Length: 410
Image 1 (cartoon, one colour):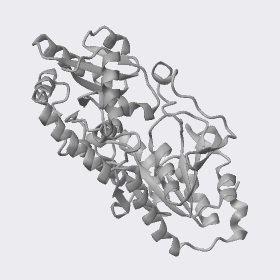
Image 2: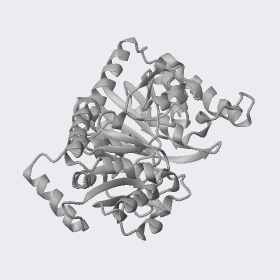
Image 3: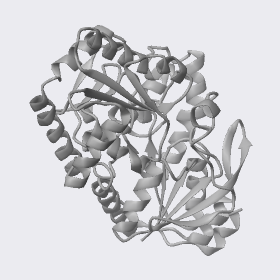
Image 4: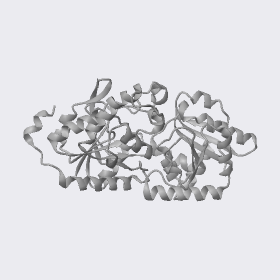
C-alpha cells in the first residue's frame, strides 16, 4: 500500500505526528511519502524567532530525502486568499500514485486540493482534526449563528470542511474537543469523526529499564544541580503566557519556602524565559531534539503543564512520571489513573497537589500505571496499526482511475 501524508509544515527534530506516524506506517509495511511545504512549524507565530528561531529550520523546496523508512518531499508555497498553499501538489500526487492520502486537517488548502485531485487519481482520502478548544476560542463561546465570528467561521471553515468531507472516509480527531470542533465548526458529519489520540514513540520514551539509564538519571541530576532528595518537576515546551509556566515556578517556590525539597526543570524557549531565569527554584534549558527528551523526563519526578495541553504530556507519562495538568485542559487522557488536575492559575492548589506527590511510593505507582497504559494504548505502533486497518478496509471500494481525467491535474 502506498500512503501519502500531507502536512503543511515539517521539522526533523520535532516529535509531531508528521514525524512519527509515517515512520511507524512504514515499519508495518506501507510505502509512505510525506509531502510538506518549505515552512517550519509555528511559522505564523509573532514570537517565532524568539521562541524557535535558534532551533527549527525548514527544508528547502525541491528536497526529496529518506527519513526513517519513509520519503520526504518538500514543495514550495504561495499565499492564496491569505493562507499558504502547496505549489505543485497535483503533479507530485500524480507522480507518486498513492492508494491513500491522509491530511492532518479537514480545512485548509491541502485538504481542499486533496479532495479535488481525488476524482482524477482515485485514491482514498482520510482527514484529521487537531484544533483543540484551548486555541479555538469560538468553541467556548455561546455566540448566536448571526455573530460575525460565527459567520466568518461558517464561510471559511464549515463550508470548505463540508465539501472535503464528502470525499473522505473518516476524520481522525486527536482529542474529544477536537472531535467536537470538527463536527460543529468544520462541517464534518458526526458519524465520520473518530477520536484517535496521538501516539508516543516508545523507542525514546519509556521508564528507566537498564542500569545504564538508571546511571544516566543520576548523572543528569548532578549535572543540573539536583540532589537525590530533590523532587524535580519538569515542564517542556513553549514559554508563552498561555502556557502559564510561571504558575509552576511560583508553586515550587512556595514549597521551597516551607522547607520542602522541590525544584523546577524547564525545557524550552520563548518570551517568558527572561522572567523564569530570575527564579532560583528553576533550572532552564533550551529546546532540544525530541529524541533527547526521554533522558530528562527519566531524570525528573513529576511532569507539570500548568496551561494549555501539550503532546509532551504523553511522552512524560510514557517515561513513568505522574502528570499534573490544569482543569482548563479538556484532554484528560494523559492523566487518567496516573496524574492529577489542579485549578487553572491557582498557585495554592498546584502547591497542594505537588505536596501530595511527595511520597515516592505514590509517584512510582502513578508513574507505572501511566507508562503501562501509554505503551499499551498510545504507542505510535498501535496508532499506525489502527490507521492501516482503516486504509485497507477502504481500498476495495476504490474506483478505478480514469486516465482521461488526469488533465485536470496541474
